[in-house]
Length: 603
Image 1 (cartoon, one colour):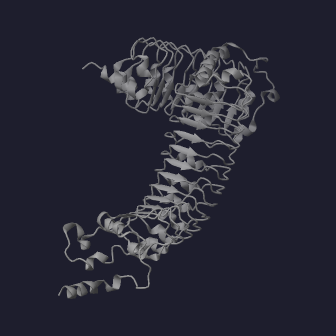
Image 2 (image 1 turned 180 degrees about the vertical axis):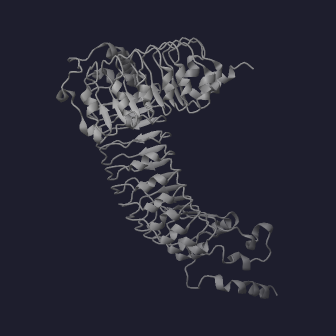
Image 3 (image 1 turned 90 degrees about the vertical axis):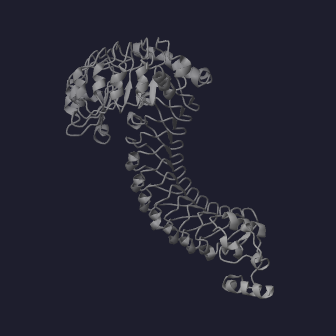
């Protein structure tokens, strides 16, 4: 009777069993049994040259023990087995995967990295629940179009293969959050990448890309983009609109200049070493409020702009092996800077022994030189309004191509008319009249009001702000540091787009009230003045204000209500005569200071 029961038990599985000629399983039955219970099977590092058939059929075939023992306990009921959801076949000798992979439709994880695969079976498209696929470190030359049908795939790892192109339908992987295509032979990226709007991490490093499609900017969730070691000569300007980007790697390419990053306000790390970049300008830096790491080693930079001091959160600055001969002394005022790498530059203004003393000593030295910069006049004769056009060195290319009107470091008491005349009908967005001897703002600056958004009048002798400046209604960035200002005109509230204002090293004794009435302000730099108090209730209303630098002023107390300004990401208060918060609290950073202040608010 028992034999008859065993015979009947065998009949239903006749269509599911291996052919008699097939090789036996190379997988211990204990692993198979465990996999039926927990839905996971790890066959990594077992020297497999092919996947045994009973692995693909694990959820179809009736197990061998079923017809050997008919008395099942609760833990051995094979008909209640769990579908296989995780299969790891990494570090074997597999040269191909069977189309039988379709027999595991419940798989959410398939890991076949570190094998010898030259292709992926088209049946991969049947794994509609797959969320993670790791096929890295193989010999793949192409990707089947069927892979693009995996709508739930979140992680796709294809690094270290031999891919030269990708299927056009790649953009159909709408759930993809992580994509690694590094160390392949890709020359182009399909424009359908624009549809990968859930993608958070994308690595295209170590390929042969000569350009990036502008469509890449549509990846609104992208936080990390790695394009290290390609053949990129330019970066699409659209990249600058990627507001979620936090880490950008462009090292080892052929870039000659950087794009501007007006929308990348969350960017924390920018790696552009080993390129051919010659110029770093204020335009590149002024929007990067969150930057912590700036890596520019092995380029051709000859100087750093003073605007480097806008990067108040900068912790690492790598300038190794460039052509920099001098540094802006204001670099010493960067409060968070922990590493400044300068080896391999022809620095003439800083002694070698000073460079060897480390970052903090170097920053201290630079701070000590700031006052010298202000009081020591540059060599050469002052430039007057009678200066001939040929002497003015008008850069027409800068005006027409870069939209920059520059007349800086001339020790000029006035800006020659020829400079403004040269603008003609061109739209100028940036004006740089810094490092002169201007006693007043040129009246003709009003002629630029329809286009100019960035004005630098730093390092002059201005004692007041003219009403002409207040008409520049498109102004977003105003730099008037290192002047003799004691107040700002109330008319400045007309600057309804102003985002950044630099008032460092002036003579303010009172926080300029008009600043409270410019709600677009994101950054206020007011260090090294004589400001005695601030109004926390007014500051709290400025909901876009993220950075305020009040270092080295005359604050006798810090109002506890300042702790309610929760939008502040950077609050710098060192160098003031107040007793609390103490230095130990300040050293912990902005969040700790605000929390401390809130705890002091009377209840």
